[in-house]
Length: 521
Image 1 (tube, one colour):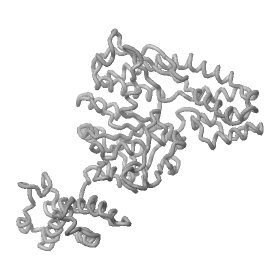
Image 2 (tube, helix red, strand yellow; image 1 turned 90 degrees about the vertical axis):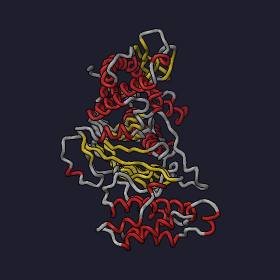
Image 3 (cartoon, one colour; image 1 turned 90 degrees about the horizontal axis):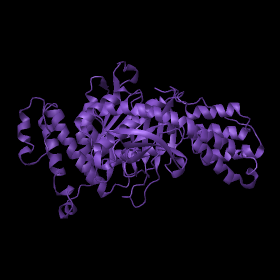
Image 4 (cartoon, one colour; image 1 turned 180 degrees about the vertical axis):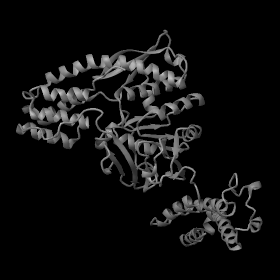
């Protein structure tokens, strides 16, 4: 593999060997750390510029010297229809798997990470459109850098808070990224955008923003020529080396995913808006869309993703949303194998349960309980946390540990509904539905001791046969009566929309009574 010099290191060397003023050195340092500067950072650099002061930041250490580990994502309120006060505990230096159906809220959590990490594809965050007066977006992210103590970042999720250091180190990938990786440019050519290597581009943008901010006093004092020359050198030389190395790695990664030739190759480097883009095309004069299937194009995108990560020697988190769409089971298995080879912390959102099971059942994977002691995870196998993501009515992003959709889970949702004030009809419907599910789970747990292959759901031939439960030695008549009477009440017209619910509604006190009786079981 070619020895590629990262532009961060080039920029650091530029500040060391060139006689530049303190403000420009400071601008370089902050560009390395933040990329496109926040308003606060830009103001501080402007103050140094106007006062002819010296740099105050410590020199960055360059690329590959710091490792970000995400610890916990906490959604307090306000993002899409995600349930309030939800949290995801991430597996440190391992894989976190979140599996759920379409519309369950998975992508809402991905968009939060994409926003905070400043993903190249800006996916907007919206408030809960189901509420007349949506709450403000409140999100926090806990993390460590180089094994330091846990830090917390509170984000209001407005547009000014994208791409915040150190979260800009996160690599993000979903269908939009896949399309951007191979977007059509000409008859048989696709352009690919690199994840990173844009520091000199950001520096030029930041110089332009500084000039606009300080006005006329800046015209004679901003040495943009040398910076532009440096940027051109980076584009002409570094990216030429980079694209050659990328082409080699791309072919290797593509072979690992799909064991045949797609006649696709990286040809050259092009520039759009001063950003490098890598040209990928067929070796035949045909339109790529006419030759490659959707699944094959996805393989090309994933191969490029893995090639870039390897080339950058990037050990920071990778976040993927539904990465195996359009892929067959054989390729999915190869993707799983490649994913498990990466040293990065990996967070995967998916609706593909086949892929989820492949990942959890892999030989070199240990699936750990979320609440297990991290210090006790001594296995050399890949560590994995697994969640299921659910939606109910207008609530999305309900999270439970994989395999733990039990009575306690449903009762916890009921408890949350009962704690809401004011308590409205929608809360009553949600609470009633989860109380029904809790009873069905309690039948499995308390009567059948989780030995039944499927749950009772009260439908036709699968109707709950209450009279037969008295034959079980571990069951009391009191338990049967509590379950039966509660289930009958919850299954009546009170939980339905229409006249029956109006005439005989389930109120707060009755729901609370049922909840307390089930908790005691």
